[in-house]
Length: 121
Image 1 (cartoon, helix red, strand yellow):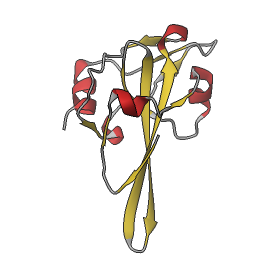
Image 2 (image 1 turned 180 degrees about the vertical axis):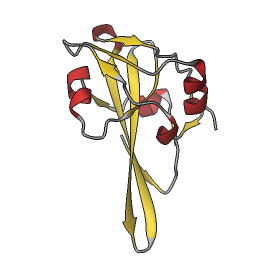
Image 3 (image 1 turned 60 degrees about the vertical axis):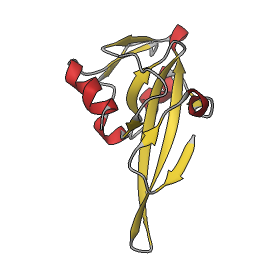
């Protein structure tokens, strides 16, 4: 998903998830700057990554969406994302803190306030 705009947030819907790039936990673990976890649906663990660049004295942000099949990956400290979700600013969402040795699962920081900070404006 390439949501090109000057917005700092992105509204996630079932339709937008269809355009997210499907990746594996192994691929996620290889990112130099990893996407941030925004929640899970019945089928997917969802991530957004915001990249900002400057053009003509103005910052432009591009938000990319990624999804990992829930059936093939375990998660610690994740949360359910009810759709359609409110606008989400990926900068407020957590990065993965640990990957399992076999790269089939991942852990997020503990704490209910982390989910609230991620999905509420």
